[in-house]
Image: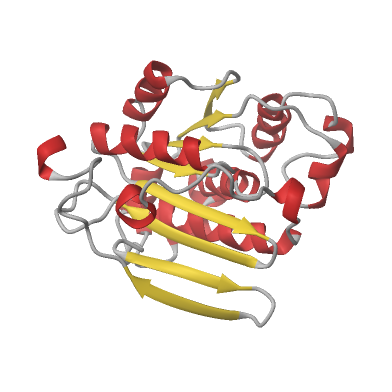
Amino acid sequence: MLTDQELLRYSRQILLQQVDIDGQLRLKHGRALIIGLGGLGAPVALYLAAAGVGELHVADFDTVDLTNLQRQIIHDTDSVGQTKVDSALRRLSAINPQIKLVAHRSALDADSLAAAVAAVDVVLDCSDNFSTREAVNAACVAANKPLISGAAIRLEGQLSVFDPRRAESPCYHCLYGHGSDTELTCSEAGVVGPLVGLVGSLQALEALKLLAGFGEPLVGRLLLIDALTTRFRELRVKRDPGCSVCGPQHG
């Protein structure tokens, strides 16, 4: 059950008929893995902690750099030089000491990634490179866990939800194929801070919907954000029956 303190802390959320007490209890018993504690992972972690998701598993092997602070709002000036995980744990504990925090400070290899994904209910990919996204997608498909994937660079962002529990849902590989690791990173191309905040906030919203069981998740749809003109577009994405990751021959 929810304690009196929890009822008070989450009262504005509980007031929503789509959430209510039952939804808040589902969040309390929910477990989320956040891969990457940079521009996307920062708002994801902050909002999921504040919303009362019972277990947050956070993974990042990097340290905080001064150039991160323009957009990675979970970190502050005193965090420079610290691991991003330790910096985030300090902030998340201060926001909500009632939740459980699980730290992954090393890069996740195939085995540790599979174990980390299997231990949670939903995975949020907040990484910044294609090879990590591919590996996370494959682990989610293998474990039958929903994946919330976001990306942002320069003044463009995108977001989608891949849920292997749904027969009609594509996976990340269906949409992007083999991609390319030659794509530019934010350190090379730049990015505006509020854009990653927007994409990360939407990722957190999708996670709350999946965990609490309300609304319509962004499955089979790709949301494209043009920050320069403040325009949003939505593309339909179909499952590839011949996908080498989620196709029937690999299921």
